[in-house]
Image (tube, rainbow, N blue to C red; front, side, top):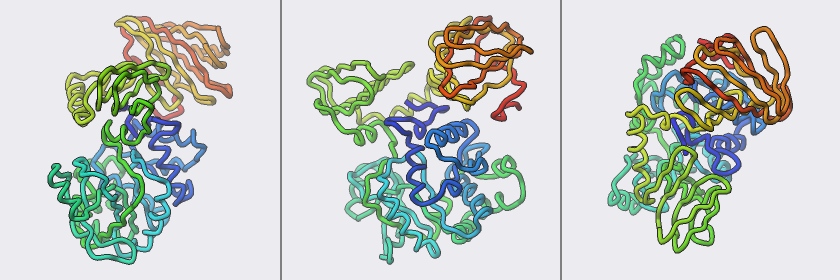
Length: 440
């Protein structure tokens, strides 16, 4: 369901994505200009596009681009540093963008601000089972709100997880609240190399080239004696595997968790079934399974084995298989395209352009393109000619000719593109003008 170029936080299992739900929760604590997102170059257009869908406008400079992933401590420090520059001393909530959390929890999270002037605050979840996929927190001395943290514990085996629950340990949610002053003081004390990198006046590329890859738990939280935990008594999940997705979904009459498709199963229950809208999926005499059907991939496995999906992804990456990176539908800052059919010498795409958006002025050396408008109105530039096409009209662009497509209308523009040539790879593109800064 997710790919490297389309990670799970942007998936829409329901009407909104996990990322969008996280943003909506944050609005319970902060105004839009006070929301910062740390992401990467590939995902920044998902961030801005999904914010736009919600009708939420945050300043462009609040979308912070990491040049490379260096784990959670550098990412959080990047965000904290930028917030400190703009707002000075303040309390900052830190939220992973791929979690499910009851929005009612935000009131309790807000109350934890009282602890921030003295403690680094983390949030723990009351365990519902001896889960081996989560880290654990052992609370100690009671405070006015929450408790001091006695110990952090790594993801355990099953027997250790049972023991942790008996000891009243909490799941480590990976959510935090920090006062900027306390955070940077503890960072200087325990991981000064990170602080030094962000305060040496270098640009972001140079900073990240010097940073170690280190988690916030290992870099600060496990070392500091100024850590408090607040227990959240609310529904929470980090959706780490298909079994957690199964647990979040209401069951149908057959006892199955079903997304999109029609379940026509016979004598089968406790299954997760995900497929395309309108497709009928039938399981016969099958229980406790995961069946995930997407246009270019199919997964079938026992629910108890679903964490092994990571091993499949690793194999795909070793083979340089594009399915590890992309869906057949690929999202771009101007809209999306779906590859409907392809061979070595041709490719057929369904292209959707968002109202008001424009593709780059570009050319292709090895392929020609034929465009047919399916819906909406297209503004097209081919060499020095500019013209409009409406539904049912078409145009042809020869290889080596500069061209550009945009949607001047108020509804999405949809076209069918037929590519023909001796090479139809996505890297056969030369850009001359681009609204999204993609000219290197």
